[in-house]
Picture (cartoon, rainbow, N blue to C red):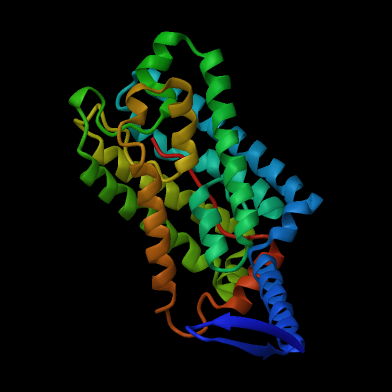
Length: 308
């Protein structure tokens, strides 16, 4: 027994049971341990986590490098309407990268999809955070390499295929840009993840057809984004990938920082709303057991894609 004196106008002593105090401390330590385990702090010390992070960094850098070079070259051709070629170009590049990276890390390459995976419990929050940092570093690396290879006039003209809202007053206001970013991201999440997280449909389609579906969805969004940007030279269209927008902004700065927050807030809001939407789907669709089956098959949480 432990005697302690307290004062409430008159001095008196009360006794406290040491075992009860110790039990509270033990329960507190257990709760803290469970919380740290739930968010995945232990994965921070796993070599596999960092191997996956390096894979995310390299795959994101290669994807953004390929898309930036290809899209810029397409826009420089001046043959007809080059924007009509972009969906075909995007379809091919994305198909190849998704097919290769799904068995490795699930083909995230996008902070939005890493967040979605964390919300669905497919990866821990700590692993998702590590992936996001790796994706941003990959985007920065791609932007630096592309800038060093291209002529300065081409870089200035196309802003490294970065995310623009209102350059030189020829774009849109941030409210419209946020609405486009939100709706475009939700569109992608709905068409891709609703199928990807359904184990039955995933097995029926198979990995190659799932890659075709994903690539097709992004090609469609590219076409839709191109239609939105017509007559708005200062607006770059839907970004869909916050990491993709960050790299060119860090390298070039200037107008790429104007309204940059839109390309983070829009996708993350869409991700949160889509997560709530999945709670209303018919029973048996996108449930935890199905998600686990998809994780084992290699498809963890979909993919990302830079949009012009």
